[in-house]
Length: 336
Image (cartoon, rainbow, N blue to C red):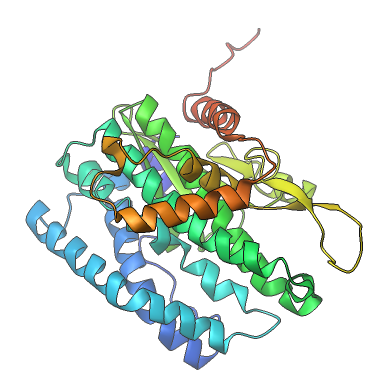
């Protein structure tokens, strides 16, 4: 779909309709303001409008954003977890998914909007590594909790849902960014709230842009997809990714440690953990990383994926084909 046509489907400004209680709305205010600012810049770019800020001013905004995220995002997440309840605890946490991916991929924004800061294959690999390392840390926490029966209790379902949704998005980011390594004219971005929350049936988690052809496709990611979801997202501008079918994110799990029954469960984080387990500490792709942290997370990754085969290359090939086919569809001549 062409940039302008895609942009017309979505609002330029993020919605300000409250969705939670006052306390959590206050906690989400800053994350929403920053994410919405990215969305406005992107909407203007897709619509052919000249950026309101020059490249230097936008760079200052990005620096402010990164400083805010480093200093505040962790505390906001912990506060939201403490104030959640068993019915909607997961929703505010999943809303912050944009920021988990936007930070390591921050250089993609000035590259897209201003054509500045050339992005190399090594740069993309660094983004994939950092996203996968973050996801592996989360998957490691889940690995520890899953050893206890309480983790699978009904009252923990909202928290499991939050973890699964976020890990699925981070796995998808690792896979989708491979498109940019294979096709340098493609940019993959996490979707700001204007594109993620504003239009029912057209909400997306990622945007894949062909900067040369000025074409774009949205990608909606689900931990697992129902038939209703397939119908809901049957749109020429959207690719629907199933975490189990498309990413291979499932494994045999003993949901009740007191019983011998083994169940096949959606288990996001496997893509990221396999990615981290395969990292070699001597390559340029990990230069500048905290060496001890990298060693620890590689150990965590190997625990998470023990007994499983990597689905990463198959997921990359499968998802890449689906996105490219949607981005550049082959038109059948009329009458054929």
